[in-house]
Image (tube, rainbow, N blue to C red; front, side):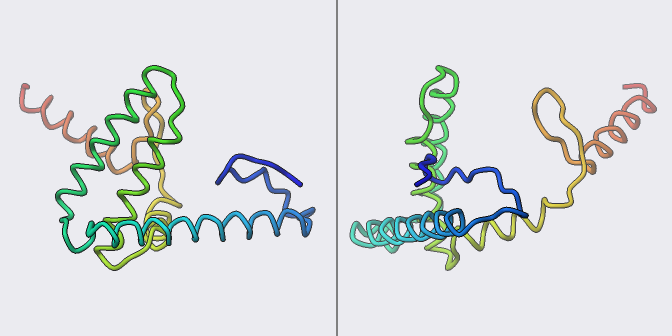
Length: 144
């Protein structure tokens, strides 16, 4: 049986998808969905849905993002940090009546056809590049 790290899907050749690959993918998603369910219950049992706020959970998310940044800077394993952020995102999604899957679907729909370019390792949307250029032009024309 194939043993890839959790949530890392292997390269897919659409012409040679075998039953083993499809089973692995389905099994992996079932495990992920079960873990999300466990995390939701964990939040409910600790009163982190009704007893907290989006603002408080956002602060927690940024705290976890800081831990992620620190471990990236030190070249350390980031899996726990990303997992902690997912735990907080599940809380925020649950309290807002949506799922991670819905949120990802909305985001994918928004970005899938996005154009732009890489600048210093960061993808910049085309409309932001156009806006930056027009702002720079405006400043140049105003003698700034």
